[in-house]
Image (cartoon, rainbow, N blue to C red; front, side, top):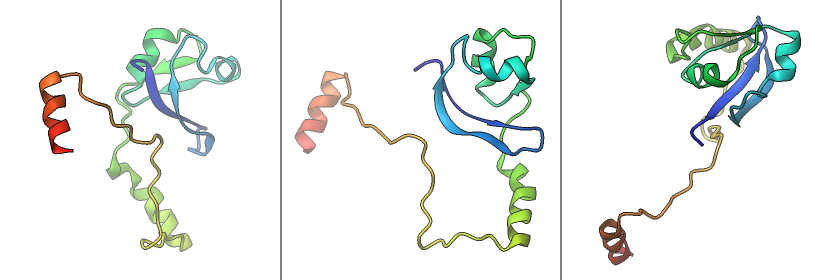
Length: 116
């Protein structure tokens, strides 16, 4: 899973074109989209993508980082539209389920066995 990234595709107006998914990056990733559109890859996955995606319509900007402070405009827009979440029933979106594994360290594994 070294080449796995969380990704979504947005247009120039930041309208989501494809949902958020976990994707293993290969040279074929986004090939169809790159045939017809220029795509700017950002965030910490841009470096992984730049090592395998070589297409003239692909550019990589490691300076683009999703930051909570940048969400102010989106939050203000939702506030003005009256779009609020009911915090009593809101469930956060976790892309993947958390999976626990047994430690390979035999000493640590024995300690954990004794606790259970």
